[in-house]
Image 1 (tube, helix red, strand yellow):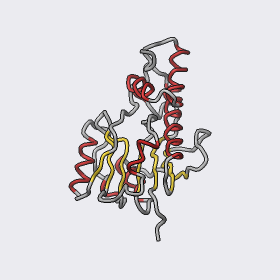
Image 2 (cartoon, one colour):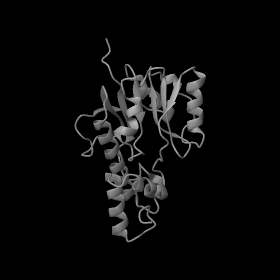
Image 3 (cartoon, one colour):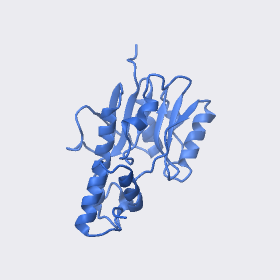
Amino acid sequence: MTPHGTTLLVIAKEPLPGRVKTRLSPPFSPEEAAELAEASLADTLHAVLAAPARRRVLVLDGRPGPWLPAGIEVVPQCAGGLDERLGAAFGGCTGPALLVGMDTPQVTPGLLAPALGPDAWQDCDAWFGPAVDGGFWALGLAEPDPRLLRGVPMSRPDTGALQRARLTEAGLRVRELPLLRDVDTAEDAGEVAEAAPDSRFAATLARLATAAGHADRGGAR
């Protein structure tokens, strides 16, 4: 018998310069962009730790570092496109699973709560968290099936719409989580930091902006 509860998945890249948050450069250097990515990932993982879940799993491209808190399982990402990697992440789960990315450091246990409560899957087969850029920041499946993600074009302005359509076309009953902004650009970084002023991400952004003496690096308004 499967234990009660939902598995929380975080899919992420190891925050290494030149491999993460490349659209933040410029105005940030690759090293600074990696610092922001690390802070974003740490905020996300701590939110996941504070949320009720059966398992908490980081699906990682790369190696764990000191940013990884205790209590998070780590499994490697598979090869292939993002749709294949997302599908494989769900394929490794038994029972309901909710996946989030590393690009929304403003996420909180409260934002995740609707998809993790005791009635989260009552009359519901999927949870969908839309992103401002047209993608999605969260996806939950009552019965994880990699086929629901494979073949969906990723990193496009219509990715979210296409993914949601894939769910409804499969006959799933879909509920929505709040709209959130991914951190892709310096402007995104500033807006997300304002939305989560007490986050590690906001502190890192403020430190980098102050050190550089620039108000155009996503920070001061």
